[in-house]
Structures are given as structure tokens and as C-alpha cells.
Amino acid sequence: MYIKEIVALWLKRMGIHTVFGIPGSYVLPMIDEISRKEIRFVLSQHEYGAALMADGFAKACGAPACVITTTGIGATNALSGIVNSFTDSQPVILLTGQVPISTYGKGALQECVGEGRTFDLEALMSKVTKYSKLVESADHLLDTLKEAEMHLWSGRKGPVHICIPIDVQFTEIHFEGFEPFTFPKPTEIVDAAGEEVSRLGDLLKESQKPLLLLGAGANYSHNEEVVEQIADLGIPVATTLRGKGIISENHPHALGCTGLHGKSAANYYLYREADLVIAVGVSMSEFTTQGWDSIFDKAPLVQVDIDPKQIGKNYEVRIGIAADSETFLLALYGLLEDATWEKATAALRQSKHKFADADREKDLTYVSAVQGKLHPVQVIETLQKLLPQGKTIWVTDPVSWTETHLLSKGAGTYIEGLNGAAIGYAPPAAIGAKCAKPDSYVVSIFGDGGFRQTALEMATATSHEIPVLWLNLNNEKFESINNAQKSYYKGNVVGTSYKPIDYVAFGESMQIDTIRVTTVEELQEAAKSFLHKERPLLLDIQIVGSVVSAPKFRQLARYKTWKLTTSRKSSEDMKEIVSYFLKNRY
Image (tube, rainbow, N blue to C red; front, side, top):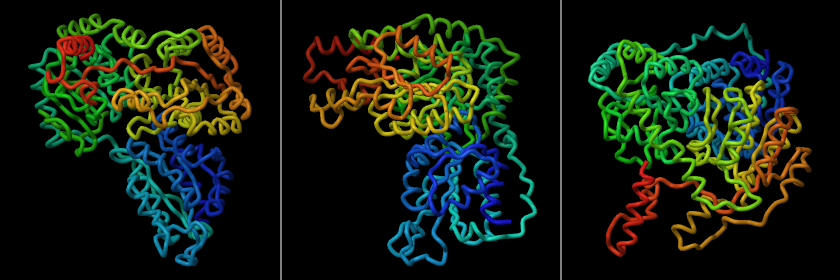
């Protein structure tokens, strides 16, 4: 069997039913075989867009996704999207072609094997994937596929890269099928880890108000049931931004997200109430910890992660457990179910009551209303009432609004690309999410600055009839950076505003139904139309000019908007600082 055929069969084996990419001479043999194996090929407008589609696909369903590009610049165009999957630990397969082996070093078009004046694609991709391999012999293919498969399914997930020269693709080998692959079972908590779980049981006996904090490493559909069972016992559950959705945020014992743009009630319980924090699959990043604040030093910390390198990386831990989230959460439920947690439940309710509607009121009043323009909170709240929770996937760029005001339910229903700060992530990633979950509604939220980078991918949705609802929050600037220039650089605004684009005409030029929205009523009618017809639809939503969410005090201190010293501060200045601290410290 030809190598190109075996690769297509391997993709089928991996459960791949959709591939994203752009054809090129050196991958045409594989693309031809992929189509013959009834794998859908989605032609993107740019390889970066294809990689982001694959990332959105993987996040929506928790299964591997695939990108295919030619060699050279085609591959490096996809690099930024692969970096995003690497930082977010997503199982994405990148397939690239390569020039014939016989032409190495001769200056072949798009050559990139590190000979002569060419870069080494295999080495380059090895820095941003779990596994990168140039298959220079047909005899090595099956071993390469086996290795790639192992890296995709084992340990902390991440992308893999396989590069196959075109002459190798046309090579025949004797093929009797793939060796049986034993999918890695959840790591059993034994030996040293088992001892740590026993120590956790002792800590829980001393605790009255624990907090279960769940991150990306726990945000899988197979954990939803046990997480809900733990919450039903009365244990307060919070999540990081990347863990959002693993528990319904309407659950009475769910606190929402912690962090810089998280729920005030969640931050308050963490800082003032929790006497034990159990963090599962949490990397303790800047956003989660409010800029590595001492907030996580207040109570004993138990950190659980499949990657031992994450444990204790940023904070001292009382107990560290290297295990997968599924195994640990099941073990945790066994430790919790025979105890009562009345004080934890009471503290949770008090925290929620203390900050009932506080986040909403702060954000709405932080920006003045303008006739004919909407506030992002209005947009989110309006759509949430119309779109069914649990059946809607939200793919979002402006997490400062959606993290707090958008309530999610279900793993893979809230998708973002924050770790790599991939601007323009949401428009193409939403296409991938819809391909992964065709029975779900998919809503993509972004600002007009990011939209300018990946807007052409809407044409991909038109070509392949992929119905996504895109929301362009349009204030004609890169708002977050524009605001930083005003705040930190004495108002010297450089390169963060631009002339407007007629997005209605732009969308229609790609045969996308496009509506300019200036009122809540127009937004409601457009959303109802999308639900009724479910077709690709772009809403150009006019939002107030300078719109940033009300920053928490630790955020301001972190970025030195206010310096907490009395030098050069009047008594009125200090009163303002103290007042803001009291109102926004959580």
C-alpha cells in the first residue's frame, strides 16, 4: 500500500472526519487519499486560520483535530496557530509535505530540511509540538505514526507534526494493518501519590470550608458527572477561565471563575473564606492568580496535575499529586461523601449574596451609555436569554467581558485562546467548533481589531455551508491597547485606531448575511433569525467608544496604574485609592 493511503487510514483510525488546510504541490497525494477515505477537507483562506479552526475543533470535542499544509511558508503560516494549541495543550495533528529527498540541498522550491540556505522545519516545529518528525524512509512511517499517536493520547496533551517528502508518499510498503494500540488508561493513584491522597483525607477532616478549583486540565466531558456530584455535597466549586463550563455556572454551589476578570464572589471566597484549596489541572497563571498575588498563600494548597512540572511552580504546596484529573476527582469524591459541609455552603451563599449583581453594576456604570451603541454586557445578556445553555458553544476573544457575564454549562462550551493571546482567534476557531459539534449552535465574539486579522475566514464558512453567528464588537480601535496608551503613556495614542470598514458591505461581498446592530431590539431579532434559519450570519454591533471592564484593584496595582506610596499623593488622591481598593479588591 502507498504511504499516502496509510496516512489517510491512520487519520480515520484517530477519529478524524474533518481536515483543515490549504493544498500545495507536496501534499496533494495525501489530500487526494483523504478525500477518497471520505474525510472532509475544509479549505481555509490562510494556514493560520486553518490551524485556529483545528484548535477550536479540538477544544469543542476533546478529540484530535488535523491541519494539512504544504511545506515552507505554508507550514510556517500555520505556526502561530500551532503555538496556540501548544500553549493550550490541544491534540492537533499538523501534516506537512516536503520536497523530494533527491533534491535536498539543490534549491528546490519550498525546501526546508536545513541544508544550504533553508530552515529546518522538523526542528522548528519540535519547539512548539510534543513530537515532530521528518519521515525520510517509508520503512519509518508506521513507527512515526505510532509515536505520534502515543503523544496525542498520553500525558498532557499537545500538537504533533509529521512531515513527509512527496517521493516517500508515493512509496509502497507491505501493510497488514496497524498494531493494536492500547489507549492510556487514567493513571492509578498508587504508591507515593496514594500516600498523598491519604494526607489529603487528613486535611479534609480539619477543613470546614474547602474550595475545589478546576482548570483546563480538568475540563473534560468525562469529569462533568463527578464534579456535579462533588458540588451537590455542598463543596464550593470555582474554575479558572480555561476550566469554565466543567460545572454549570447556575449550579447553587458554583462560584464562577477566579482571577483578574473573574467573579468577585469567587475571589472573595478564595481570599477570605477558604481554609483549603484543592486545585486540579490549574497552572496558576497570571489571570487565575491576579498577577501571582498572595491570595493563594492564605490557605493550604493542594495541587493536582498530570504534568509534575506544574506542581509547586508558582506557589508552595502543602500536598502535590501527579495524576490525571479523572482518577483524582473520583478519589476526592470518595473522601468527601461521608462528611457534612454546612459551613462551606453557608460561606458560599454569603459570598454570592455579598456580591450579587456587583460585577454587572460595576461594568455597566464604568462606561457611560451612548445613544445608538450597545454595551458588551447588554450583548452577552441579551443573547444568553435566547440561546439554549448547554447546546450553545461560545468562542470568544474579549474574555474580560465573557468570563464574568457569560454563564457556561458543559465542557467545551466556552472556548478562547487567551494563553497565547491569539488576536483574531474567535472567527476561525468558531468554524472548527461547529465542524466538531454540528448539532450545537456556535457563537463567535470578537473585537473589530482582531477581526481585521482573520475576517476572510468567513468565506470558508460560506464555501462549506458552516453556520456560525459572528458578533463583531465594533468601536473602531484596538481598545485594550488603546486604553493602555491613554492610561500609561500620557495619552500618546499610536497605531491603535484606524479608519472604519463598512462591515455590512464586506460581509455581503463574501455572501454572508450581515446586519448592523445599534439597539437591543435589533440584536434580538437578528439572533432569533439565526436560530430559525441557522445560516452564516455576521452582526456588526456598534459598541460604546472606550469600553473596558472595570479593573480590579490588584490589576491596577499589577500594571502600576496607581502606586501605593504616599509620596506625591495628596490626601484626596489617597482617599480615591483607598475607596477604589475597598470596592474592587475582589
